[in-house]
Length: 246
Image: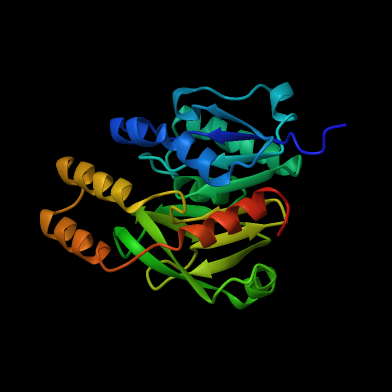
């Protein structure tokens, strides 16, 4: 019998920009490249377009990744409600689930937490994430430093954790940067999968849509020159979580 051959699905909550499509094969390509290992199968479901796995398909997957989105995790769009039902089901099946940005928020909400606009406004750029004492045991085995830098691009956050979830990491701007729920679910507010060029591209899109001011955009871009996200460390952390090696 084959030892590996694990199957994973990306639950795509955003529309791919032309830029990420051309350069990275979309957000699915980014995640499959960051988390995929030899012998695995990776599938994508465009949940924001109403494309969901059937009940009998769900069982065949070892883990799921929920992506970022332009939508609000506190909204009640049909697909968002449907996604929350799926996540409750995945929880009852104890499937591994990794939520990123919007994914982190919707995962928290589906498990009984609260999300909403961050009082501190937009967080865009490279942010230092500090690991909580509770999680340092989990991470010492990973030889992780006390903090890691990650690319952020959000104005919503998890305001209240689900019961029984624990904070894994925080930052100066955001109290819940990461959380864990049991051994099978984890949320990350930042974007371990992003590169700086993707962020610059997103900043331009936010600017075009008048979500942010040009002075703020210039400031964020200037700061980006000086900081590097710890992409390799995040890759290792996310991969080990998803494959049950944490």
